[in-house]
Length: 566
Image 1: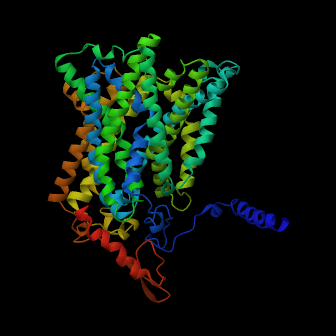
Image 2 (image 1 turned 90 degrees about the vertical axis):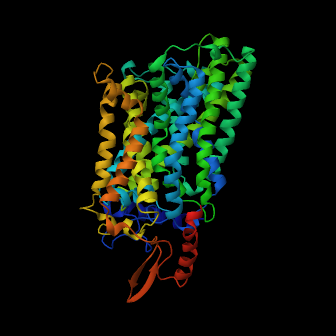
């Protein structure tokens, strides 16, 4: 026994000793990396190893059922109805808003499935080796904010789980925190518990998460259906929300509908940008699963929105007010049976918020951080940085309970993400016709250096797409600001303007002022390296010295030769 313990303790001591120096935190550099010899990369940024390509078409289906089913999706119709529209417009807006997002989701998702590299690497093809960092930092910032909000929302669900077992949990804990802090002692404890429960799931490698997404899809869907049935039974009907009249008319109503559609589309802007971070794990022969997103997201979003509308309408009959928040609804359930139901509602949204944080926020931030500092940050370390920063340093309870202007600003961040996803998609599909030099994506002086690491075509297209939207964003943050009606209406269609204008301009600049060196006749997935005076084929996955490297290379070329059929 002593020998076994010594074998475990001694390496741990040695590891801790190394960690006292900065050099001790350096990650091992993979022999298969395409990175320059004097630069660093790590396994999470390199081409996805074959053994990590575990996702199938069914995984994508489970992923989207999981990701789309969150508390924000349940409450989405509330913000639309609050503008003076009815449940009909709420449903239409959810359908069309999510359908708009499926365009970049599919276009960018296929890139990850074909090239098996994450978004920060793909972005170099269009933005340039250095300027791609701007796109990465923009997405990192958005992911951090939403991770903070989703984590705090999960803590409210955790409160329901705990109070269902111990009803005194809501009242027995004395509050010793000043009101100015924006949170009570009980809420802070719930936040800590949820954050602690969430952490192990966040640290799980992405290629091992497929069963968690399936689990979340089943749990959240079953509980959501049960809540709808229970509320309709309590109310004896589905309530009178269906009879609500219009509160806006004419052109005001039309612009309100368009603005609501953009609000829904903007909610998925992060995923539309970072979807390659997940599709890179697709198995050979399952690339078609990426196209399932075009069906999954609209169907699931409108279904969850309908659940929210029906339950809220019934809550008005039972409790005298519209309760859009599912955890607030569960908080009304008392008695043994009621608390049992509240526990399962809380549990389902705990699982739901963890799944959404994984897919939409944490992993995207971790990939971005790893691309900026690959020598010291991999996905796991990036996850720790993200969840500590968003969960505590950014004090998420302050964000949630702050002025509406801050929340409007965060929603408006989609004006920056829409052009990024458009430029990435246009570059791969229209400009380069799916012909990418993968090794050059990792090299500072490769094909995608452009002008000092910046592709001016992407920079100009991005600015033209973003600038007209900024006055509208300013007015959303500060309603007292005065801008012309025309400029304000551009912001009402912010996602469409940002995506379409950036897509068209990037194509136009690339067509009339092409970067000739980057226009290839076929994809390049490998290069030749010299090791100990001997030339080997390096495909970015297999050790160049392995005897079967060429054989594996041939097997990898085949799926891409058929990529046009996907």
